[in-house]
Length: 302
Image (cartoon, rainbow, N blue to C red; front, side, top):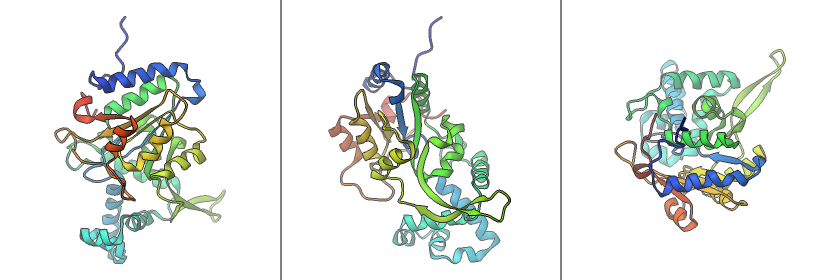
């Protein structure tokens, strides 16, 4: 019986050949060093026209504002509710994100995860005419599955909220919650509950998980250096550089959004800082594998 081909959604060509060559080469790597990290937004699932987590926050904001109009008196939330893009830009996305995250202050981790699950169960992508939970990139999920077959540990390293991605990572990617590294919200212990309870705060621990923070957070939270890293924006640059510089074989993979027929065509940018040069130029200069959605993927979504 003939074995099923690996990476079936990847078109034949140089990108697929390089991926397969890497997969073959890792047979020489000790299993304890077979570690891969994947960015989430724009790398594993669609991030346009808006981030999935942002839509989750906005859904909660509109619900809360309908019940209690005073919620919209906070300047950050008022700017979002009004749709005033200039006001949002003037305030800055970091403050906006913190204000939105504060809508869930006081929830236990379990309560927050349940709300994420309920949102994902019914949310529809605004332009792709498909459920949000199916707006994942089939070729990347195939790559994760193939890595696991070759005894890799796979982690998701996201600029988004850790708990938000943890609530969906196992269902969408088979990645356990403890293997998700993201922007961390603070918790406080509620001793008024028997046995104690953790409750979300409106504060963030450290900085947003982008750029160099991804590297330090991988080390401090997971304690392993990846030999494969995949991303799509300047927010992933240091993570890709770190993986590529490990003892070989290594692979740094950049997803290039150049398919405006099946997804979107755009230049990926970091969410919390301005980069010096396009990440695709960095990839070419650094010898990374740049994957074209339009050219290299036979199928984009499940």
